Image (cartoon, rainbow, N blue to C red; front, side):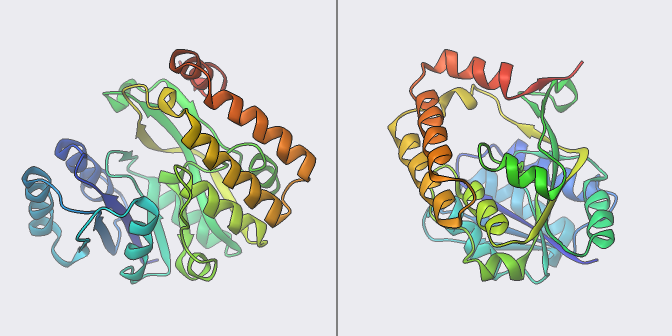
Length: 275
C-alpha cells in the first residue's frame, strides 16, 4: 500500500530533532513511505535548510518540499500540504517526534484488515530528552464507540500518530482554523459525520514534550478555543447542550490554573507512568 507522510516545519525547530525524525520514518522504518511531503511554514534558517538538502540527496524525489512565503499556522500549512500528497492514505508526523520502526507496518496491516476505517491512530510515549528514557504513556481508546464517547471530553487521538484517507478529509473541508486545537476539531468532524475510526493498542511513536509544554496550555486564548470546541460539539450533536456546557466550564477552569498546578494535573491525572 502506497502512502504519504505529511509534516509541517517552521523556523523554531531544532535541525537535530528534524534529522532524528527523518531517520525514524525512513532509515529505521521497516515499511518506507512512497512519498514525504514537508511543508515549510514560512522562511527557515540555514541549518534547517541544510538538513533538508541532505535528505533530498539521500532519498531524492521521495521528499517533496512545499515552501510557503510566510508563516500561516499549522492548520493552513497542512491544508496546503494535502494538495501535494499523491496518495489516498496520509500518515501525519511532527518534525521533532520519533516513530518506532514498525509504526507504518502495523498501521498498514490494520487498515488492510479493516477497510471501513478512515482514520487510525495509536499510543505514544512522551519524552523530554532521550526516547529510551520515556516513562509517560499517553493512551487513547481503541474502538469506534469508545473513541466517540472519549471525544466528548478529551481529544481521542494522538495527532502525530494518525493516518487518514485524503478524500474524506478533503470532503470535510480539511483543517479549519481553531487555535491550538486544529486536530481535535478535525477528528470531531470525522466522527460527527459517521466515519469509522480506531486506535491501535500499540505504542508506535515517541513524542517530544520537553520544557513544561503541557503546563503552558493556559490563559484566555485557550478559553476562547474551548468555546469554539463547545460550539462545534453542539453543531455536530455529539453531546447534549447541558453536558457540553458543564464540560466547557470545567475545561476552562483548568486553563486558569497556575502553570505549576496545571503541569501536575497533566502529569498525574492525564498521563500514565510506565515502569
